[in-house]
Image (cartoon, rainbow, N blue to C red; front, side):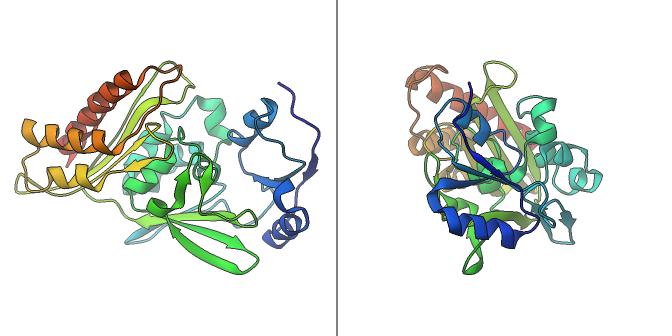
Amino acid sequence: MIPAAFEYHRPKDMAGVLSILAEHGDDARVVAGGHSLIPMMKLRMADVPHLIDLQDVGGLSGIEISTDSIRLGAMVTQHDLINHAGLEEAAPILREAALQIADPQVRYMGTIGGNVANGDPGNDMPGLMQCLDATFTVVGPDGERQVPAREFYEAAYVTAREDDEVLTSVHFALPKGGYAYEKQKRKIGDYATAAAAVQIIKENGTCTAASIAMTNLSDTPIFSEAAGAALIGSAVDAAALDAAVAAMTGDIDPTEDNRGPVAFKKHVSGVILRRAIERAWSRA
């Protein structure tokens, strides 16, 4: 559990970060909170000759809430998401999800940027960001660009971010309606066997909009447009729930591991998704 030797860099600004990335190319990696990359380095699953720490880079830790949108700097921690009063009111699903990530020690250091940027299919925030239709800002040598969360994840640990780019912020429209983040895991601190993020809008007893994404059931988080569409126009009754679960089951592609065989994971995904939809509907 000891990483290979590496050189540690702690630049003061984004220009310094990009300069080191340009100099060392694939041999350099950026670290935010460290709870995704450092364990991989200690297990020798990642060889990082040059580690770039973002802790001293200014402008990455802000939470901005406007009348219609929210912006989170990449260095905002899970602890920040849980304890920011304005954010709890504007987007309570963020707090609900963050409280289910690992344990307090991890949440004090783990960041939103680190959680979404490295493409780990077991992380909680990527699926939630897809549910919220968030956009990621990445900065590289050619400037800044925006990447929708629903287009960011390409395979396990493979994303649309280039090696010489850094994810600097996340932004999305203010969520509306009912919400829920439901998660099943074997023990505290473990990745989810299955987790679901749901946002639902109800008007006159009918679902008029629904957004659904799930975590750790494929090589990437799964945003299922079909699952959300199955609820629209319904009173979210048993038939609609069955249709949404069936649609999601068709989109996921779990693999057998120490969290269970494929059949078990598909069953758990259905149970968790039903719970999340029902709870979001009750809050809508």
